[in-house]
Length: 467
Image (cartoon, rainbow, N blue to C red):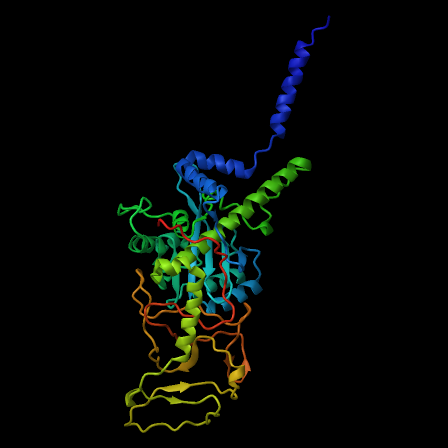
């Protein structure tokens, strides 16, 4: 009789070894194990919301029906950056968020990924996904363009919203030289997380959901659930945010594998990156949705009718445009103006030496355009030798800046293309300095130029009553 025991053991050992080699652990499974190790409470909390979705007690977070998304890195074209610069010139409200790269203890996490939303009410928003580990060289035209774009975003006339202290979040990214610590303090900065707690406690009756401790803040996930009964998935919190998320970077493609193993790795890495991109986009949109009700102190009724409340902003804008009136101008404030349908003379009459010279406003000549062909853009663009007083000086409440003028999200046209300002008698793509006269409404309401289309949020569920 032959003894097959040794041969059988060798065969079992080989099969076991082969199965171990061929067993593939997906990146999402690895991420789940990592999160359970370092953030076990977050895993439990996220799973609880997921279970509520399964039982129909809430729904997944709802993105806007349409938006524009741009991945920013060394492969981004100059044409795309030029388009974004033009779009930034027409935007005054931005939402930002950041993601860090987790490193093994005791090392601290490193900034790796930044999201910026161009906030618009009357047309689709634009989302920038900035991969700071894959930026173009600092002396390249693309980097210079990108730095110019950041300079426009962080100009003093703009509003920046974030879930948490925006200065603390943005300062970590100054080392990439796209903006400085001084630049990020120029806009009006709004910590929506801090403001949300005050608004929620004043708008909703006390309940078990209230956080009474002074330093106990609401997470973005819990705030979205409390107000909209939606689940904002936080599974990607500890993901590898420095991996190169955009598939165009090709960082997920193995160079030394072939066959089934290569296929499995590519498929798993693509799935992970798409989930990370959705996570990053949703965090910006979630903050923006909460921004309106917090900054402008919406009532519970306005929140329950969120879409209708957004539409009311448009109607208020229309009323503001129809009722705009100029304040009386005193003799000391008189300005000489060249009207649009009258050619200015070549030589101006100069005042005598003993007379005080009046400020001269140069308005570029254009033939009169019929009203039916004119498009109001929400701002009056003029060249001045001395600044004029804005028509309205009311501003929404904010914490981090002392500026008193509200700049509002503006729409340009039905599409995302840019309308350029005429320069002299010809059209130019250069952007020269202008004094912009903003307009707002009383009672701290955002206003926008009228537009036949409104960005739709598919809100199918109302906040739960016991809140």
